[in-house]
Length: 230
Image (cartoon, rainbow, N blue to C red; front, top):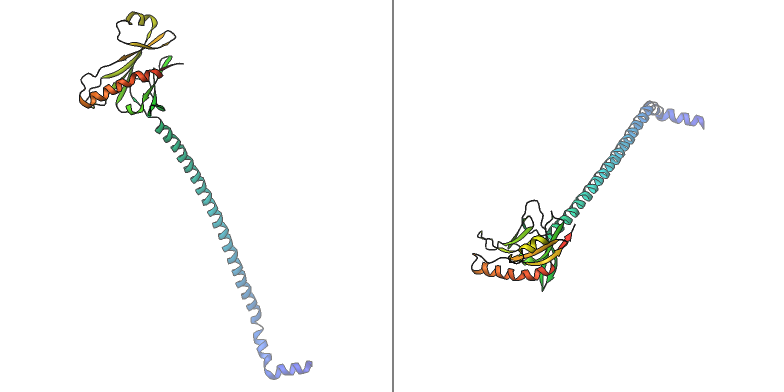
């Protein structure tokens, strides 16, 4: 059997083919190994970049999420302040360092009302409910112990006083009570608060009618006048 195999190789020339093919076997193996290694390296490189890209995407997603939360919080804060400012309609003020606020609160005969506070620099703060439809038609002026509500609806510069509230000590009030033309509306400790109503003055036409209508509201508003002690 062995002899026959040798004879077959010798006679068919397969010997030369094997001899010629053998030298290239190591090179072929080496080349295939190199290709395999390169492919393997490429796969690891590709995998590395995929992982890196994934981490970067996660960082971007985290940044977007944080930014979104911050923006949402800012919007909520802005909405809260806007709602507060919307509910706090300011009355016109001309009173130095004193602050006067107008806060919607309650209603009277279907007309909404707001709270106006004044005398903030005094130990006794005045608080009065004013009809909301007065807004834009009056200006509040505070000077010392007196606060006046002046009509500005005419838009001509004529600003007659609708009414004023002033505080006196009991002794001061006793001296001028009979001739003041004002009436008491509240007594707190030794302070007497009095109301004085103004006249239509030089107003004419619709402005005069509006002034008189607002003047009629005053007596009703005085029922809710309060004095708050600090």
